[in-house]
Image 1 (tube, rainbow, N blue to C red):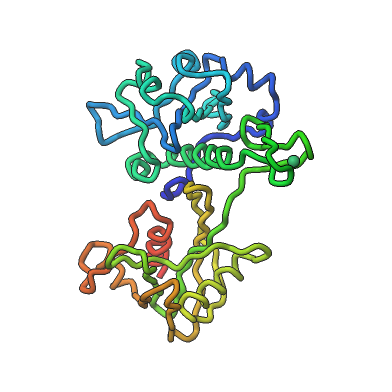
Image 2 (cartoon, protein in one colour):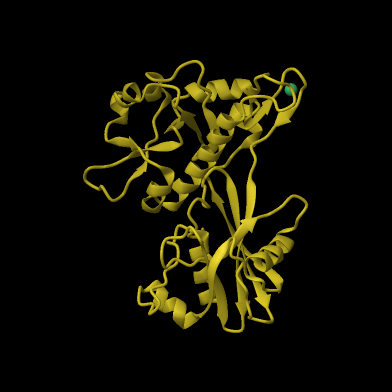
Amino acid sequence: MNSITFANNPIDRASEFRSNVEWQQQAVTSEKSLFMIFFEDRPLIKINSERPNEPEILWVSHQQLALVLTNNITPLFLGLKDERPHFAVDLSNLNLEQILSNPSFAHSKFIDARSIAPSLDNPSTGIIAQAKSNFEWNKNNIYCSKCEGVKLSTKDTGYKKFCKQCGAEYFPRVDPVVIMLPCFEDKCLLGRQKGFPPGMFSALAGFVEPGETIEAAVIREVNEEVGLNSRDVVYKFTQPWPFPSQLMIACTAIVDDPTYKVDDEEIEEAIWLNKEDLTKILIGKSEKKIWIPPPMAIAHQLIVDWMDNN
Ligand SMILES: [Zn+2]
């Protein structure tokens, strides 16, 4: 297991059961099943008053959930864990006060996934990523894009939609993003996007375009953003980023000539840093008052991984 937030989902997705309507119906009402709850993209988090620094996902039984569950809510089948079916339900269409009046939800709060993730254990963040991205996809894909005004039907508990009129099928999408460190001798390059908070530098990043390999996307983005020619792209690791549904692909690439020229549109400043510079940055002792994104960001993990290997 790695330390990447949103990347360690412990649930066996057991996708063979998604389309089995009978199995799903039984599982939803089974005493063994567990449900997590979302409201407007926020998971319901249990805050134990004795251990307020250890929040956790609130899991409830069907019986505990039944008070608020209505017929038009389809629980999303997350998969199996410890032989128990795990589901997520999106209660955004219900009244918030009514939901929270359920005694089973006492000491629990709907909290934005980005702000609660650093306080949760890593496996929980992986489960939240799976459910959150799926709910957002379902919420944003209501109509068939070929048949005007025709509503899509949900299949496989929410992993698929189809149009009864033309038969088109729709699947949840994932948007790949490359995030990379150009490397020259004992240094790596970080950049500052215009919108970053003062002093923050990070790895370069950009969306993979249709028909493009990851390697080509890295080389293109490095060239576009800082004018460097890079080669020998090495894939390191990935991170699901459920805002709403990116897959961050962390890479390094070698540069032969370190003379960069920032593209003013995207990047306002770039800097070559060695391991010593980065060590100072990590302990908050950077003379230039530079800082990098927190451990939750894959850019942080990529920089630390580069430091460990150089
Ligand atoms: Zn259609």
